[in-house]
Amino acid sequence: MPRLRPAPPRPAAPPHADRNHHRDGPHRPGPSPSGQSPTEARHTPRAQAHNPPPRSFSKTPANTTGTPNGQDVDKPRRSARTPAFPQAATAPKPLATPRSRLGHRPDLIPGFERALTHARAYAAEHGHLAAPRDTHHNGFRLGWWLFSQRNRAKQRARDRLPPSPHLQHLAAIDPWWNPPWDLHWQRNYHRARKHVETGQPFDPAALIPSPGTALGSWITRACLNYHHLHPGQQQLLAGLGITAEAAHARTRRAYPWRTAVEHARTFAETHGHLAVPRDTTHNGFPLGQWLNKQRYRTRRTGPTPAAHALTSIDPWWNPPRGMVWQHAYQRARTNPHTPASRRWIQKQRRGWLLLHPLQQHLLTHIGLAPPT
Image (cartoon, rainbow, N blue to C red; front, side, top):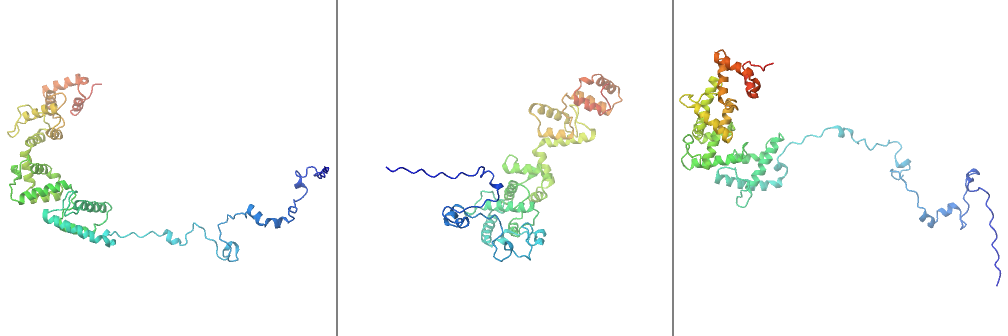
């Protein structure tokens, strides 16, 4: 068996060669194991696969013009934030002229004409365009279409734009197709007009139709609120014979308490209060008895329409501490120098702390002050 020859010892590296190599001068790479120089080894295919070329982070395009960074030397580089045309960035855009949808959508014209034909047929049959939203006419959803047209007209009015020209066709069919009041009122008006046109009895001042019917109840409410109605509504009612005088006459007959309220208002304008004795009459009307009944009814069942009307005339017509004190207060207010009024005033001063705050408030109106 042959003896193995020991490997020759490696030459020892100089001490601290790696640690102080930068002190001895610049590092010069030696030849590669394959015998190639470092520059040649860097360009071999295997070295290129493991060491790809460094990526360029420059956003400038490749140099194809022979000038630095591919740009013309004579032309300065424009900033990305500077617009190409400064006058275009500062000049305001012209406002678009408001137009109808049919003006720039010719494809909608046939559909509008078809809907307009259904609207004309419906108005010829019923006499108006106040159709409910679920109305269909020969399979066409006329109610929804009219609802959409009203919404668009109101939106243009809110935006302070002129009305659409195509809506004039609907106004030609029914001038009140889009009234400023509720359509429910408009439909009831057309029921009343049809009632009159068919020759049925109609006398609003004589309670015909009766307030117990649906139509009569609407007429009574319209007469009750006649002075609060829109001028257009008053004009439509005048065509039915319902004027301000007829509305007043029907209201007085349909609501008898309104006649009593008128007597109470006239009495308060003369005397300044409604603290009247029980036996008081006004132009033959038993005003004292009627006021006592209204106080009793209000305390048992709560405020009534007559009670609200009386409160607007005299806030103290139904005082919380009864009418005896209120009668004496009104006598002291109107005739403070009588012996009875002086005694009553002295009594109120002595018992000031026992009075209701509202009573104390009333006494301050006639010059009484809380004791110090």
